[in-house]
Amino acid sequence: MCRGGPAIARVIEVFSAGCPLCDETVVRVRQAVAACGCTVIVRAPHEPEAQQYGIRAVPAIVVDGQLLFIGVQEQANALLSRS
Image (cartoon, rainbow, N blue to C red; front, side, top):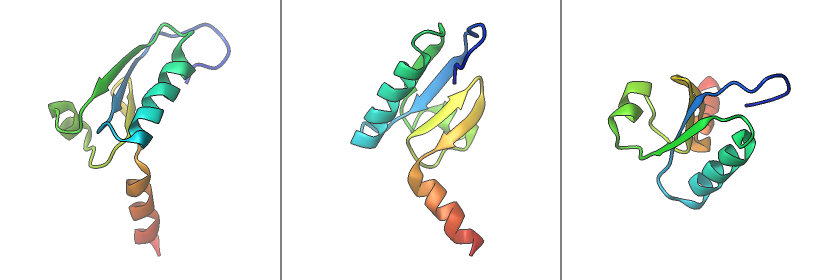
């Protein structure tokens, strides 16, 4: 998320249900942006922001209001629907 060049402070929202995969995602996001000055906000999937972004699976990552990643189950569903 923060690679090379000057650090750009961003707002990163991680939607988590408290499962091991979600917890690992939160840790990895925090590690990835530690040097950037980014704000990491952990949200629950039932919060209004989840509906605003159309999040139906977790973990999910939103950067500056743009959905970047949705949990692996959602990715699997998308891949299977292409067949």
